[in-house]
Image (cartoon, rainbow, N blue to C red):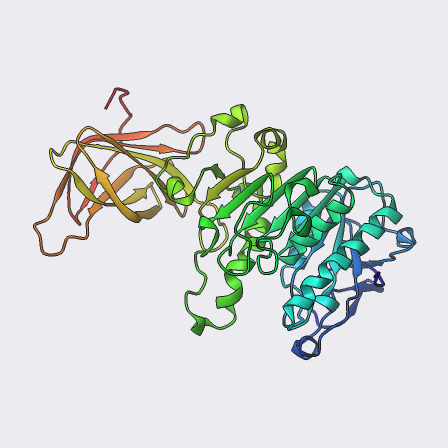
Length: 451
């Protein structure tokens, strides 16, 4: 069953169906409210076009005659932006920024797929049923416009990720790229590849997971899957229901803001291939030899530069951690400690780095670590900001002991290696760490030996 596609692009927080901009009518995503959602909405798909010529004034594209819109040029690459479930009926607050960011990076047709009428419904299962017809409408438009399939990039959020997959499947995986931002889990978990997004839906599929224990999808769906902060609880998001609606949507929505931040090339995040999040936090997955000279892949918009390497490797699962707000990128180090206690010690480590003007601290305490004589313990240390070159380092050895005498950790060698290529490691030798007490020192050049 085909639904009428009227026209084209934009998203904003403005409540009018269109605004007057430079004497022109500017289209917005359909603005509805909770009353519409309670009544339920019938599906209508509108395509809103933004280009560098009309980057703040969306133009409605005709489903049957795309070329009736003067700013539409079918020879340009096309990026489709597809929102997900809208239980309150409001337009996505992030869409305008997403459009602006994409157009700042590339000269493309940025096409917002407005299916708010159909996505606004308290009956989630009816909304899920609408995803296939939305994909059919996008498919029809692409065919009518005669677009170059390999130049199409679809960015789908939640249900929009699966709509992208269905569209790609209609073209037998010939479209260039699908980016899935926390693809929806409910109604898709356990389904066959034909009933959800999968790697065969495009030449390259990258997927980000931020809420896999609730609204997102847990398993791998792309050629590369990113699990930010393990894929579930995101830093800064509420932990209790008393925080209101943010408790339900913060983790899920974080995927969009992480992706937006990745478009700023000074905020790029490195993602590390690993079998699970625990091994990543333990510093066991910091080598990217499999990518040869490319190094570890970055997260987000620019991962397309790793496409060839990733396609050779098959499905790749990666992890990274973030700050709770932009810039989300952290400064990472590989920490290696060799102790010389005759008895095994257990505990965690707190590290503070200082340069001439700033300092930053991290607590590596996701579990208690084993420090054994002449055995190297490797950990991942990640800081909120980059303070390299480091002038002073403060260490604290922490245990859970309350009633027993304070333990001491004797360190034969401490080495801290920046994960950013080209920076020198920092060392210190013969340190005595007394439990819960700060020890501050200046790092020195490392002497390379067995210990």
